[in-house]
Amino acid sequence: MPQSAETSAESPSHVHLPHRQEAFARHVAAGRTLTDAARLAGYAWDSARQTGSRLMKEPQIAARVAGIAHAKEDQRQGELDELVAGLKRVMIDAMERKNDFATLRAIDMIARLRGLTPTTAKRFGGVEAALEEMHRLSGEDEETAGEEAGLEPDLPDSPETVFDPPMPPELPQPVEPAPAPAPDRLSPAQARAAARAAAQQAARAEAERRIFRYEHLMAHHPELSPRIEELSDARAYFDDFDTLLPPELWPEQAQPSDAE
Image 1 (cartoon, one colour):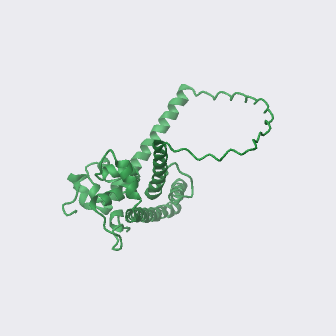
Image 2 (image 1 turned 30 degrees about the vertical axis):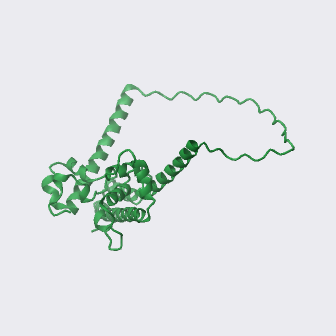
Image 3 (image 1 turned 60 degrees about the horizontal axis):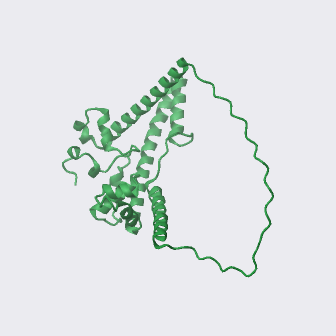
């Protein structure tokens, strides 16, 4: 069984950071922006943008973010392997019972988990997002500093001979495209059926996410079962990407008594 992200990220070789820097690294690895991560870690609210960019430039913090992100990815891959193994057993059982629908359903889910078919879900790595934001903030800071100092680019000296290029030929008048045909309007019955199908699909997807969070939490932390009265209660222990949060980010009243 794969270890949880907070356990696998604790390797004996990584540098132990101060509490706020460690919290900042964990929030960035969870997909937060540098500004939000700095604020959630307890840094000053007004200067969180500059603080987050400065912290991410420190090698030990950047290495810690990468280590946590890699541990989360390893944990996610291990969980995917477990799910695929279970789906393969379901597929074999359905084939033995000659249940074509269940067999095709299992094959489709295996292909989606393995990334063999396109899905609408998209996960963003915390490290890549943080580096991209850091580069963007650095560019904005340089532009702001240049505007405040009144810097202007150096212009080359005017040559003695003035270059007068010929005028380009006139371009032909653009031809306006034909208007697109009006889309076929759905009848009221068709519109209601489409809306009902979309609502059912969204409800089914949300139910599957709730079941996944509850089963994952009970498998890795059964001691929390007295605190989980409904499936929706498990939502507080996961981030927006359904990744289990470290114990220090759990709701305070639900943390185990032996957690540090």
